[in-house]
Image 1 (cartoon, chains in turn blue, orange):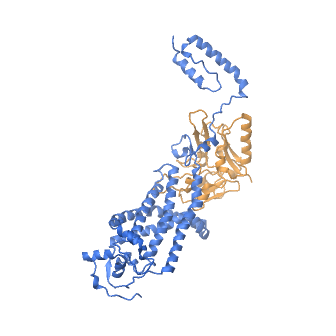
Image 2 (cartoon, each protein chain N blue to C red; image 1 turned 180 degrees about the vertical axis):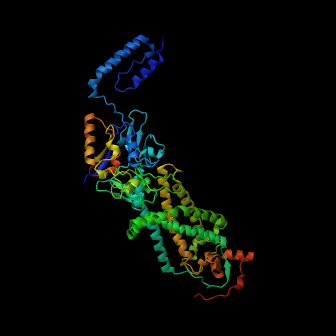
Image 3 (spheres, chains in turn blue, cyan; image 1 turned 120 degrees about the horizontal axis):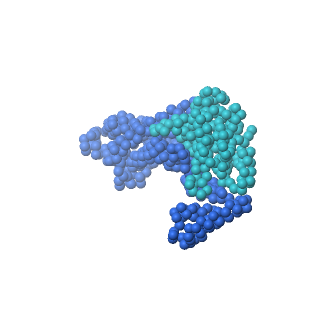
Length: 364
Length: 198
């Protein structure tokens, strides 16, 4: 009999692995079975006899036990200490996720700074701009002749998206800052009720908003491809800062193209990150959810700041601009100043009154 | 008043899951929610340890810090409780909690999670003590009856300890001295880092 039986082999392997046990001789296969049996018995006896003496000194059954400190120290950023769990919820297998502390820190310390600078900073800039530059009026006054700028479907899409955006922005800001700003005014109960409805509105108005962004992308992309003319517009500062210089522009000038792309890219990021929050079981992972909430919050603050500028210039900032999205028809002189090339195109197509038709009206 | 805490001696936990079962039974916790769970680290490897896991009722609790409607409060005993009437189910506490303690009754999409549920340290909620209304929302209020949390009370190996943080820490330290080893007071550093008795 050259080899030990399978049973013996198994036993020998077990013995080798056990700590605090004398190692078996290496050349097992050369030993004959009876010799081996005797040897094993002797070793077992030795082990039993030796056990009480060594127990108090060196034999520690848990010497290799996992240590919390070591596990925590070995964690990389975003890692978790996790193990096995006997319930179906796989998220429950995470024992400690230190990243929660960072997420808390983001929401309590960093986000108010980001949001404060972006939103209050933008409001301050716009207020300064209004004081310095005043309302921008058409330099040649209003002609009284109108030209169709946005058709009804375009206006519907704009206001669909805009109204959703306003509710989404306010309810979102309420989640981030309501506790500090609004809760003390109304008390916990009223504020929680209001926030509950605001959250429902936020969750469900996300869908018409996403639809609006998608339609806007489809109907306006052709007029929003950046070109050489935009560079010239930007170099002249859009003619906003100084009077009397209106760089030529097609249907949308560089500033409007900027707003378009902010809405499209910002809207896409908000939708994508929001999608993960609406369907939290898609990522099935708290670290990913934390990541998307941070993206959602930061983009939201920048988005809101950019839209404040958009709202300003489309209403109080510039006379005649609101008509574009209000009635859809703008004054010909306004259009000529801000979108000279577009007016020429429309006139060539016969969609607009001829060039000479304007009789100048005094500017208020 | 005492600052109550949880301590799980992982060198004693035998992963019997009795704490989990007792908790579910005591509070009639809804299906799908486990206020307490047992996580096994290094399963099947040398040095495997099991840790019984629930809300640790942290000092300076992250859940309370991030809650947009401020529905959390800390009792005089240091128990972190929340009001289900105020909770809007936004999920923020779940993102911030280092232990994954907050859970939601609905595995719902479209952001509908329902009101958050977590371990109450068997101390109920903001409703009047030991009323049916409190029981329906938060489960039994054993603390009001002068009893400790059921999970720790019935732990067969006394691995899970609940009570005055200073006392249970002392018990654990004595154990470590006597047996000569210990894998740590799991999660204490994370939960009670700012605590004077931590």
